[in-house]
Image (cartoon, rainbow, N blue to C red; front, side, top):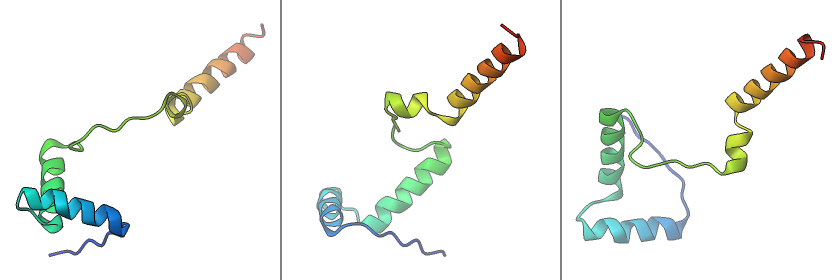
Length: 77
């Protein structure tokens, strides 16, 4: 068995414990459930979202823009 240590502020921990208590779960069990679900689905069990600015400056978008610039430079326009 491996151990995972997480540092989180006291308020968040207390609020999570209160929520999980309603389901009869502990933080340890909830984390195991998270890992198991993520592995089974090969995805995170929630949606991640980026702002428009983060999407615009993403690595793939910046590379695409730079490729377009290089093509324009090579076209000698």
